[in-house]
Image (tube, rainbow, N blue to C red; front, side, top):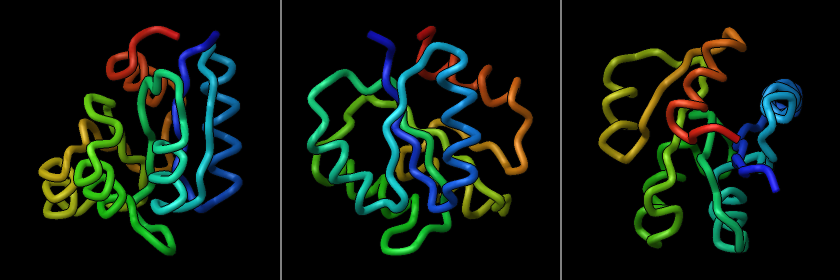
Length: 125
């Protein structure tokens, strides 16, 4: 069974692009379109989650709030979180790192760089 990665992104187009890329590399994917749904998905998921890839700007609950909620609820402990976003402000990146994000990639992304980051953080599929 392939290692699962949770994609948290409000753009269905970006979720589809990243999902196709990850599945082509041998990973399985789960999807959520906002942070609140991602927290619920992590709580309900009974398998081994390899990592989470999340946008910052989303409705309902943004990516940084999602990380804080996961940590507050002791969910996804030890699961690396990579932010994939259009944002690049140093103070926002630092806030995400303090919350628990392990990496930051700015959109539009290069597929080979995203896969390299995934393999570094999540390991091979």
